[in-house]
Image 1 (tube, rainbow, N blue to C red):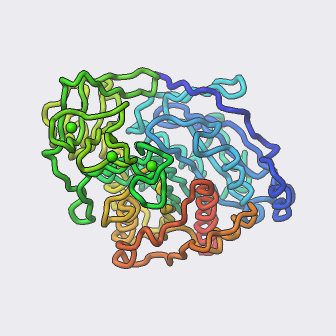
Image 2 (image 1 turned 180 degrees about the horizontal axis):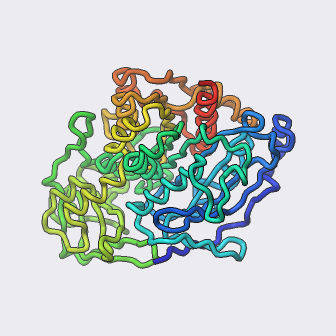
Length: 481
Ligand SMILES: [Ca+2]
Ligand SMILES: [Ca+2]
Ligand SMILES: [Ca+2]
């Protein structure tokens, strides 16, 4: 099966981005020109298309004739484009290259798209970021680290001569972070040269997702929960609690699967097809065993949030298991609901699915194989994906931080202020005064209760600047070791 992506926009290409700031910025390097090329990487699951962005001039790398390499992994559960995606544009990559990096983006197996009239089809079968995607990423990383040449027999340095195989890192963009860590878990011994990891608000495990989703906010223009943000009201009032020790705990008796309402659940698959399941799965706030909604929303009283007296519907992830299209729920939800249709993954299938798709379980294994890996976990007060459990602010960031600390990895919550300031000033933006400088490797007990205070201000418009600052800091640390 191939995944067809629409052609998106125009290639920004070698002539760089737009805006006067970029012209002035060129003073830092002779031209700041960015080149890019498409390349096929031979992997265990066939040839995978990748696209390499690099400085056009041989002396324009971060450290003169040499510079770090960043491998990008996009978020969501589906495929992404070599031409940029919703939250990451080619211009974002080009800004990173102007900091002296080589950036590699790539295709999941079974992904096909057309860019400027040419078709790019990665071999293999799209597997919703499972075993084949993990194998493909391993080999893309080996290409980045100079251990593997392209399908045409060319090493990365034949494209980008300054690519430093000792200074290679990964950008785990949102759910992309889970694929990164699953790969380091399964293939860490082959990837122990990987120097650094930058994460962007990755949902660390299936349990923290029980809190709801930002995109479920019933009204993006009102601040229903009075948090200071208008878009974080997709909070599940029946979520219960999350703790580092106990994980997710909630009242399972509130979970209901009702098939008599005439309502259905629709799930979209990567090949464009949809699976419609009869009935609805939901937390039953008012205890009537019926999914109460008005115009498709559980916000019955229209106050812009989901109240404990209102219902809250549960979504799932689409996947194919042994050729069958299925929907996967959070493990504890699935365990609490034995009588679901056959299109919902069984408990065993659910556990198997998540074992390859959440970084919580992978960090200890990965850390043991690569104890020198250094990480910056970037997050802001307004998380782009998940609200947080009351009493456990930004639990899914904290959980990742805690696992780094527990397993002896160097880790920092958000980049150093100096790196942020540098990039913001290049863009003509003032660094927010409230930006917190968090020392690396702060004890867990120091950060646990104050994760919200330590978070960057709302980064809606600047997340790529923060990510680039994080990459600059980690690459420089590696260079200076
Ligand atoms: Ca809202
Ligand atoms: Ca109800
Ligand atoms: Ca409400």
